[in-house]
Length: 498
Image 1 (cartoon, rainbow, N blue to C red):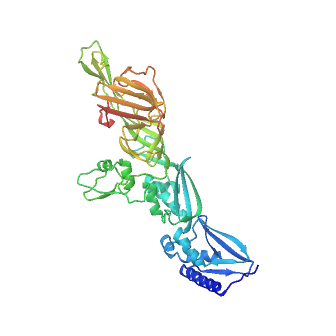
Image 2 (image 1 turned 120 degrees about the vertical axis):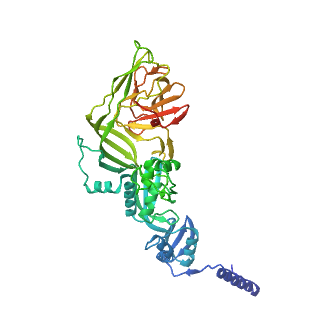
Image 3 (image 1 turned 135 degrees about the horizontal axis):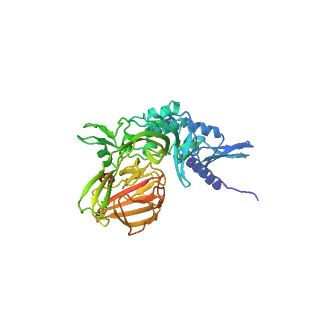
């Protein structure tokens, strides 16, 4: 079949070609026809969508790198790379058209972000809980971790541990008032892996160790809060107002070395909430001289008139030198294990005799019995603290007492009636005692109960009711001791113990 075109048809075709050429020019489509085949070309895809065909893929990569001076200056790098989802495939053809590489570059620039070479650091907290950090240089992460360790350990102590210049310590009668400590091990609680990758500049990328150090310590890139001290304010008051404990306050203010340090009016202190991204585990041996307070034992004699009282034996405090294995995670004590005790001066308990019968049904709330053996260690005070597992700040409604050993006896702090005993996932094995209508004391994380412990049983002050353990939501063997007054929790140290 022959194609016959008259002059009118040819004219219309010519007009159409002129219009098509004009549209191509207006739309900025610059394509070159290839007809010298076979020729190698490259199809360019972005996020799975084809955006063009080019003759030279290296020319596109060079153009990407050349045009990104702003990115190079911001991140202090020598080279910028294509987006991660840019794909280029090689094709051999005999004819066809290719796009101008500048037009393809514009499409890439308008659609996706470019990348720089760096490292992705993955911090594994649990099977389904990961924290990912991007850095340009691995040494920045190493330095940031070291800075975080120093925040909890101290620069001088950390340096002597690394250099191997720590002093050998041992229990002896010559131990002075200052505790002796020796770091045995420092490690990171989480599993950390690193891999080199091309990182999109749209992601958060840490450029230096100082910036990353703040993030590892506070869990945010925002600037920590600052408080201006007013006349008479103490460290404890300021920390409490910002839901910090004193230890956390000292961590974010390393120039203040003592919880009893005096602050001056107008002084600026950091009050940012410590919420570390990583867990710094420090294992150390500690030796210290401890004052062992004597107890007051009351004996009743029904042959004497009620109201008659006399001291049968005067009491005096003792003194011991004790060594412990201590584990801390981000400054919080999680394990305290007694290793050795040297008694320098034995304790003599006071014995008071009272006439009449013991008032078990009332309880003597004028004097309380310390609920553990002595000496002991307070691993967590009453007040605000960061939950090690949840990473959130909360109020600790009691005190944690440790250092007397797993399975050591737990005593009733006051004569009273058992109102609850059992187990739950938070308190572990627990006992709750009521004393008159005013007080309730709670004993948590016990390894077990003493014989005869059941609801409605009356126990006497100083009676063994259970044994120190590590049950429930607990980190290491300790007793969580909690006191409530008319249903409101209070600082157990506000009671008078004898």
